[in-house]
Image 1 (cartoon, rainbow, N blue to C red):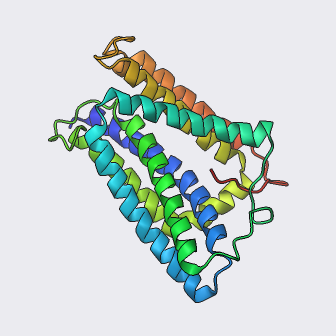
Image 2 (image 1 turned 90 degrees about the vertical axis):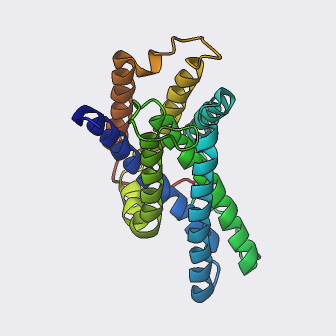
Length: 257
């Protein structure tokens, strides 16, 4: 890869790390609420199984999606799904004003250990699909790296998604506490993260519409410098807005999906 290509790949990876950090903290909080009723020893076991499940589901999602990444129907479903979870979050947060927290979370004391583990694994599956779809949407428009293809993805694109997924798991395991505190002091970052997910869904929709079998946009449009610059500027503005429009005082409780 030349320097320009490395910088472009590196920038996408940095964006993925930031997005994974916010979403992983949100996901970690949801899982913590799920297992909090268990005794300390079994709680640790449930979290361990949950982390193991996160690894398995993340990698399975990655390899399955990598083989389907060039199928426009899959791209379309992914775009609609990403836009849906973004709009769903914003509607719940600002229109319906629902707040999910430990205080009003549904009691789960009746759940047995294995039932709790099952719930955690199902949550892991949903989180994995969200994360990998967002990563694929960011990576598919990257220029070809020249590395051998893996599934339906360029080798470089696959490695960026793989690295982002692994880093997301590391954040969920080791840095979730930091990001959770950050979300409490800057609650707007959570909404910004979901808006970014929706904007990434728009990018995937553009990529889908430019697919040769659809042809509603020029095939070269997703790689057009003007579109790429516009995409990253909007993404940056969303992130900056999420940071500066957040208040450290009276921060609302975090929300899960």
